[in-house]
Image 1 (cartoon, rainbow, N blue to C red):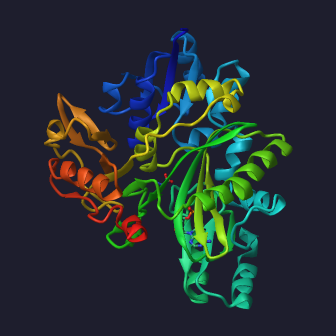
Image 2: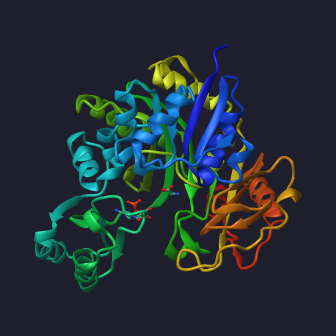
Image 3: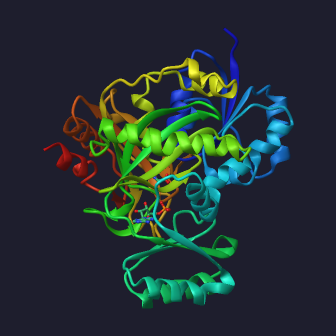
Length: 429
Ligand code: AMP
Ligand code: GLY
């Protein structure tokens, strides 16, 4: 069989999980990860490459005979890395800039859903010069909470759920004045608040055929019981019992198919991973957001459950042959607990030695994120430091397995939520 050299871009827990899964492929030649982390170094070769320098990426790909570039995070996709490489004849797994606008612009995504009749929250978009109109609009609607979203990429910091028009006014002022959002807040989407439980569905698409890989539930808040500040994600479990097979069918018919068809009609077929952030409301599943990549930490629970060869899926997607492939799962539950530096998502210290990494059970999985190799010792280097994935025949089994192993790992000021998966257990009992 022909082997493919792969360049994977990214360096978080998600990319460690992707590198781990790709490294198990029979079709893999050499796996390069840029920049990677000490975890990905166990799965392939880390390379220091400035991935925002597209010419440097092209030069690397040519000199290392890389047959496929896989992009983990959203920013390079929204910046057009896939377009640039594809124009040079390089195969890329990930959407073009135009297709990545489903994540890159909330206004684009909302208008797209309106045009293709895809269920989502009601909304209006306002330009920076019209923020007074936005306030007048929320006042006239008089329904709280209401959701304000910066149009562009804001690393999870551009969404506010406001309980009063005073808060709307305050947030609009912040969007107007605060340089933190830059161009991302030149437009603001004002959106109806949806009641329900959130769940994520991950889809792989070759532009024409889309298949559900699996579903999961994230835990975005820092505190137990979903309290405190928003984070990148403090843990996940899969599958999400809230997503019954009827609901998944509804997601397929009312959301996935119209999205894939709509993007074709728009002349930007969607190729890559499509992450649907959903709210399961009384009226059925509705889209909270689209993302053009795997979730982190959802990826860490999805990929271990996938029996298919991920590299093969990516290559088949590149050749538009996903219609010939069946997605196979191992039927187990998985739970991922993120260990973070105390203080995250605000300020925290770095450089703390991590102990116990070698102690965890063989059948659990460890994915590193904000960690670096300091002359042979693994030390913390970021907010979300690592994640541990447990599995079981039941959700309770997966949770117990994950925590049993998390408890073996320690570093100064380590923090993790102790209730990952509890929401799912409530649905089962
Ligand atoms: P987003 O970045 O669009 O996913 O928003 C971040 C989080 O805000 C989501 O995960 C939800 O918890 C919440 N959220 C966003 N939009 C809505 C909405 N229309 N109704 C209720 N919650 C929302
Ligand atoms: N865990 C949420 C995200 O990746 O966006």
